Length: 272
Image: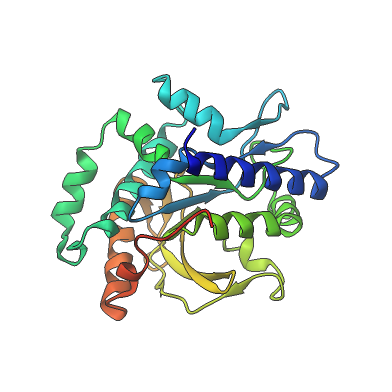
């Protein structure tokens, strides 16, 4: 175990204890975090994924990042039954990783499409190995819980989520439809939002969330499990297969308005 992994493990154990005190009534907990701390710490563009919740049919507690690490290192296909989730999240991570390139501003649709089309099944595991993978709700998960239930867990456990954001210090955060109706409904004294970076009704919003005195770009996207979405401007149903191009458009739009924004988000010092 490296010094980084030891430091991460110590911090994580302390956070788990804090979570257990907040959710003393939880039947089980699926804790989450950074799959490979040493690898994550080396990334120029550090990505944190926040989705809604995991669940376990048998109601068992376990560490999601430890399970993912074991499966990846054992060449086991992670999230094997969630085909849309795997494909779309892989596309999103590939596009966001382009921010680490010095000449991102020169990238075109053709460049991005070529990168996405070259992704294979093994790439998803390699991508997850490099990121922080977390959930709003970590306890008593069920497949398809209500917004009211998710809001309850978000409100009670917000200190845990913000501590994860602070400690991981990501370059960007991406969430699968967790702002509208969920985080966006939390009280203003609990959560602070900065200037919207991109919100033009395209199905991709980039907000800024304040944690520990600094703002983090927060990509609020359709959940990667979706196969399609309704375009708010045209009212048409759009396939998720080229949704990554809308994300790319939003990233480039931010670059146009704030030329140094993405560059300043690179090489973040984490685990402090």
